[in-house]
Amino acid sequence: MKLREEWIPWAFVAISFLLSAAFYCQLPDVMVTHWDGQGMPNGWMGKNMAVLLMPMLTALLVGLFCLIPKIDPLGANIAKFKDVYWGFASFMALFMAYLNGVTLAINAGYGFNITYAIIPAIAVLFYYVGYMLERVQPTWFIGIRTPWTLSSEAVWKKTHVLGAKLFKAFAVVVMLTLFMMNYAFYIVIAGALACGVVPVVYSYLEFQKEKKHVKPVAAAKKKKRWE
Image 1: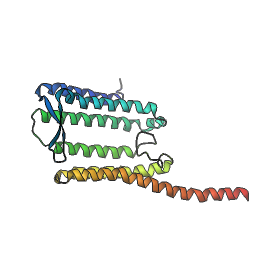
Image 2: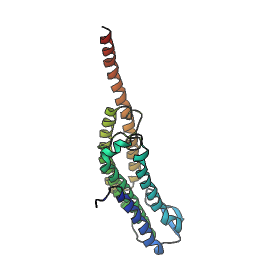
Image 3: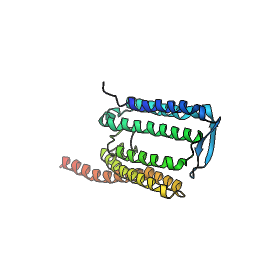
């Protein structure tokens, strides 16, 4: 029987729950659940809630991925890149299961710096986002969704080509922050903002260029009809 793509992310949800169950007896009553940019603990939670939080969030996320193709007005387009779509859903579920495993291991007494464990995972995540953006078709939920990309297929394509390059480049930068740990937090934040803002501005500028080109062409056709 062929394995359906949408089953894979649910497998990672199950793994996340199993990890929580396996570590449960080794965990303190109050767990560290958040760290600052230097890897220092700055957030805590009771064990019973902490062991369930990440698996439940992962299940909700995967449920949303299952729902999107059904409620998106452009859901038919998802079928055109469904392998990449479900690959992204699986990768997100794996990423969150990994975060859960790292959190559990640290609280169980396995000593390591969480920053060194998380940065490579973030880098791979951003690179996969870039890979996906090269292939995503217009939808209301997936991709770089601005009024201008959703109004023009050409602008959508150009913006996603740029976005893919930005996310892949940023993935490399994130990995390099392993050698610049004092600045890693600031570099990641600045890069994430650039990946979010630059494509939006670019899509607006490209839409304006397209509109300026279309108006003279439309005017010329209208003039020709009256001659």
